[in-house]
Amino acid sequence: MKTIVTIFLIVIFSIIYALPLSLSYEGNELDSIDFGEIEINETHFIQIYIKNIFSEEQIVSVSSFFTDISLSDSLFVIAAEDSVSLDISFSGGTNIHYQTALIFTNQHDHVPIYMPFSARAYLPNNEFPSTFNLFDNDLKKELFRLVNNHTELSYLNARQWMFGTIDNVDGFVECIYTGILVETDGIPNGNIMNTEHIWPQSMGASIRPAQSDLYILSPCNSLANTIRSNLPFGVVYGTPTWENGGSKRGFGIQGLPVFEPRDARKGDVARAMFYFAINYENPFSPFFDNQESILKNWNRDFAVTEREHNRNLAIMDLQQKKNPFITHPPFADRIYSISTNEDTPESKELIYPSLIIFIETGIIKIPLFNKGNTDIVINNVLKSSQNIEVLNYPERINSSEIGHIEIFMIQSLEDFYEITIHSDMGTYHIVLKNSNVDIVDETIPRVDGFEILVYPNPARGEFFIQFLEPLTVKTPITDSYLMIYNLRGQRIHIELLNTTQYDFTTIRTQSIQFNMPENISSGIYFITIKNDEIISRQRFIYIK
Image (cartoon, rainbow, N blue to C red; front, side, top):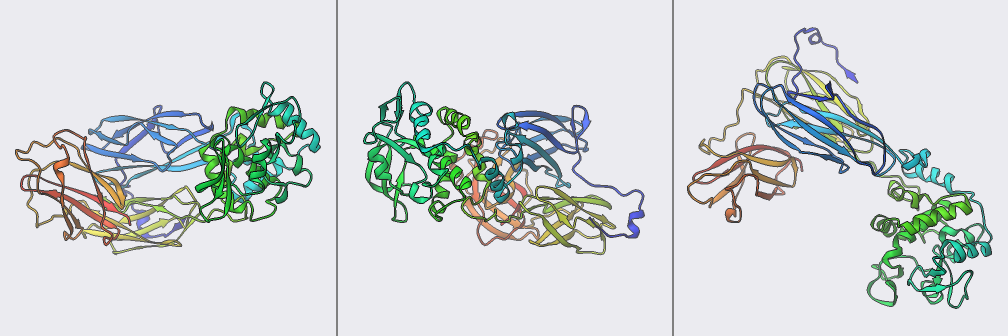
C-alpha cells in the first residue's frame, strides 16, 4: 500500500463517504461474502439484508461477474431507514478458489460498495485434492503424476477384458462409431468386430504401455475401423465420403480429411484423447494439436454418460488409475493448451467507479477491483486540484481482489475534480462531482416527465432503456427523440425513436435497445428522451 504522509491525516473529524447502506448476515455486519468449502455442482444459499441508512429513498443495484452467482433481485427501491433481503445462491462447477466482487451502487452515485466474494469448491468425496486451484501447466503436471505408471495389461488381456466384461452388456458389444451390436463373450472374429485405438497406433499408441491402455481402446466394426484409419477427429463439412450410424468421414473446414464420430460418442472420444495426450506427453505432434479445440468443444457439449462413468470405474479396478477427464471434464478447460506449454494469456481488467458524487470535505475511499487473471501494478495516482490530497493507494492489486484509493477532500470549491490512475495496463480517470452542482441542459425545457432506467450501467456498446412507471400522456408517444449529452451539456447524438412498437402504459414491460455510436468515446453522459409532452433524463457511464 502506497502511503503519503501529510498533515491532513491529523484531521479528527474526517468523514468517509460511501454508499449509505448497511449490509448484514444473521444479524452481524457484513464486510465479505464467504461460502467457505462447498462441493461442486451443489447450490448453496445465504440471505443478507440491505438497510438504507440514507435520509431519502435509494434505488440500489447489485451486480456480479460470475454466472455461477444468482441473485434473487438486482434492483431494489429501498425507503429511508428501511431494509430489504437479498438471496444469494452459488454453485461452483470445478474445484478452484472462486473469488470475485459483488458491486452495490445507487442512483445518487455515492461511493459504491465492492463486496469481496469467495468460495472454495471441491470434487465429490474430495477426489483429486492435489488439483485444487491449479491451471495450465501446473495442472498438466499434476494430472500426469496422477495417471502415469498405471498397472499395465498385456494387449491380449486388455482385449479380453474389454470384449468380455468392460464393454459387454448382456452378451453384446457395441461399435463406438456405428452403434452396430455384436453378440460375444470374448474376443470376436476380427472380420466382424475388432479393436479401435482412439489414439491411432501409427501416431504413438503402438508402444507399451499405450497399446493396451483400456482408456483409448474400444470395440469397433472392422469396416469403420478401416475407414477411420489414423485420421484426426473433426467436423465433416459438405457431403461425407462415408457415413454410418451418425459417424462420418469427409473433409474438414481446412479441406483436409477428418473423421467425425457420432454425437453419442463425441464426448468419450474427446476425453480419451485428453487422457492420452497427458499420460504419453502428446506424441507425434501436431497430430493432437490440430484437434484440441474441437475436442474441447465436444467435451463441453457432450456430458459423461452413466456408461462412460461406469467404464471409468471398471478400468480403474484393472489399471489402478482413473481417467481424470471422465471424473471431472472441466479439467480440460482449465488447461489453456494441452498440446503445448503455453499458459493462459494475461488478462487485466480494472473495475472502478467512473463518477462519484461527494457532499462535503473529508476522506473518500474509492474501491478498485481487479477482474483480470494477473496482478495490476498502480504506478501513481494524480489529482486535478490542490483541494484534494491523495493519502494512499495500492501499489499492486492481485487478481480477483479489491484495493482502495484514499483521498482527502480539503475544500469543495470546484464543480468537478478528477483522479487519474496510471497503471501498467493503462490510464483511468475518476470524476468527482460536487453534489451542489447540477448539470443543466439549457437547450431542453424542464418539464414533468417520467422515470427511466438505463442498464447495464456502466454500459459497453449495447444498453437498454426501461420505463419505471406507466405513462399517462394524452397523446400517443410519437416523434420521440433519444438524445445524448456530455457533462458540458453539449448534445453529441440525436435520433428518432420508433416508439409505435412499444406499450408504455404498463410498468416495466418494455425496453428500448440501443447501440452506442462508434464515434462516441468512453465517458459520463446523459440520456434524454423527449417529445412535445414528455421528457426524461438519466445519467450513465459508457465504457468503450
